[in-house]
Image 1 (cartoon, each protein chain N blue to C red):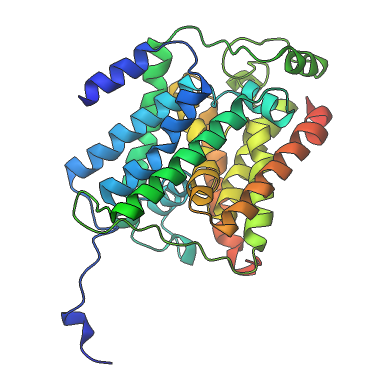
Image 2: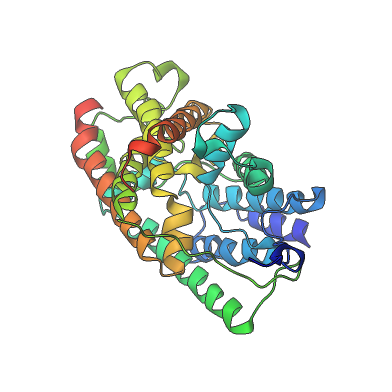
Length: 157
Length: 192
């Protein structure tokens, strides 16, 4: 191997953020918390309605979100868009492996989604909305993530 | 300008129609990429929090969380604050669910339809009852374990992943719905 390190550019992605950079994520998070609440996707009742196929609302929201995100990605790629810091926009591909982690982990998360009536974003938004018992759900989710970290070497991926 | 946008959003007090809510959610994908190549996703915040709060020897939590995850933690704190703001500036929080759903849930002995989630289950006083414990604690553990195992949740897989046509995300999303349908139709009647 040659002394590549001297010429290699340091990727900016994942570098420690400045205070102003972090403020941008806080503001985007605030916007997302407002959207989650105003769209009512934070509601256990809406999640029940979705899993009982009794209203198209959640499906319309999810599908239109995917369509807009996909169209945005296509536009960013076609334009060769760059980030504010000037790097090319890039979405890292996920590794498929055997796919077991997606099928099994996905099903486990689905069970939890219907039981709590919330996915991770809404858990935080619900605490802000005054459903403070969801702090216990967040702590339980942290315990679940921890447990995954413990069992990970034994699990098929 | 951002203040204007936020106050316009928030003064729009009723529930937003799907064709406003969905596209706005979708726009978080390009917004985070343009800021600094961040992939829209919430569940990785759980891993970063574990790594930050409970230093351990486990490989899964041994990485520089400040470097890769601090942005995500600011994002989820923002979500909490956004929920708080929306709840204080908006109108009523009663959810106009379909009559069929109301009937189905009444059969499961849900009687309080006010608020975002039924208070009979989602209250501190109900946490140690069977239905409260299963819904909040067991449900929470499954959310944390499942998203860590699958490497994403609704935002990371269903929205970011499907928008990027990732096969792994499609498998995950099929799993999300399989799990959700099993819990709704087979598990809820057992403990509610």
